[in-house]
Image (cartoon, rainbow, N blue to C red; front, side, top):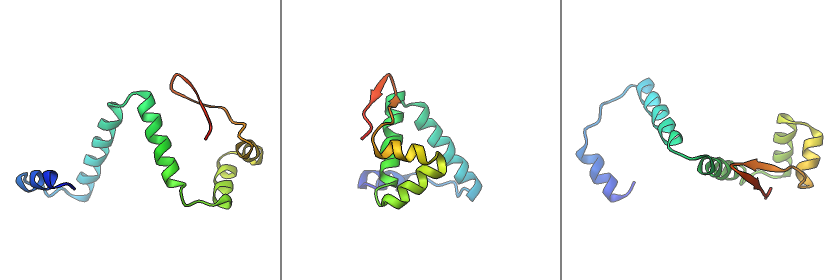
Length: 95
């Protein structure tokens, strides 16, 4: 948290939310942020998040994920770069 946010946080009183209330507040806030995104921004956010999550994966990890969610043929297509990727208005390159 930056010093500006720290100062703001110190001046605001907390509500001492329960665990459930805090979880609900997080969900409401996440949905509010998502609702304010256009499709391209939302897709970029998902892409960046997924790539960050996979950063430490090796080939075995990636293959297990792809074949668990899809199948061996999809794994072959993914590793050969043959899956067209669409999000937003136009086709994006599979990086």
